[in-house]
Image (cartoon, rainbow, N blue to C red; front, side, top):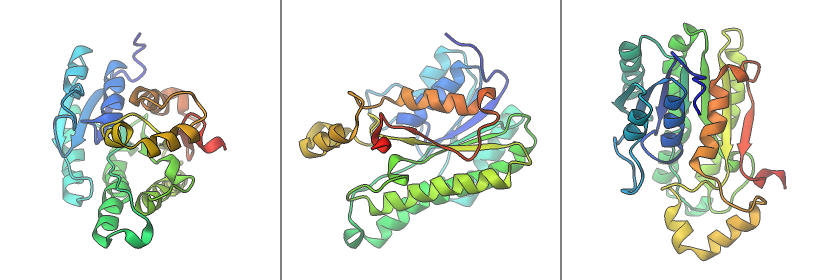
Amino acid sequence: MSTERLAGRTALVTGASSGIGNAIAAAFGREGANVAVADIRREPKLDDERSVFDRLSAVDAESHFVETDVSDDGSVEAAIESTVDRFGGLDVLVNNAGIYYQNRAHETPTEEYDEILDVNLRGVFLSSKAAVPALKRSDNGKIINLASIYGLVGGENSAAYCASKGGVANLTRQMALDYAEDEININALAPGIIKTAQNVEWRENNEEILEAWHRDTPWPRFGEPDDVADAALFLASDESDFVTGTVLSVDGGWTAR
């Protein structure tokens, strides 16, 4: 049941067409927010995933699509400007857009490393940089970054991804210090194994990886995008007004070991 915890507020969610971003955007709309969907694609990665715009329409949420490459300064600045023009301001930024390739350090092509860092870490920096002036004008300014369990602990065959998400976790802490006087809450979520389009091929076709993920997740199931969306909703709401600079694990106990 909706409690309208974000009534009258505007949120921009990067990578919101699919997976975790889709779920976060839908949850924010359900709780009364205007939602800007910032993504390089309008529709989900998988044909059987429900469109975020259908989900937002179902709860009568106002939505706005902005085609966005988070690794590009101009694209991110245009997305923020378009959102502010459409809704009159910005209250919540969710830096969710991310990519993941598997490789050990010595086997990682340099261009692959650069691509992952550009989207996962540079994207957080650029989006936050562009959004801060608008968030300073808000009475409820929040930034929520998507880190990862692999930003807190090491993960096999994930050199570039671990580097990028470790950077996101510490950039979150750093920005929280810089903008505390402005009362902008800046936190991160560190999801564990969440069932999304990004990992569906491994879940369905790689028994070895699947067994390892089950072994390392103490909870008896993997996470769903809505599990992360619920945590993001807390960080976007008034309930987290004295929470800043934290990285909240949503991982079924993975990092408790």
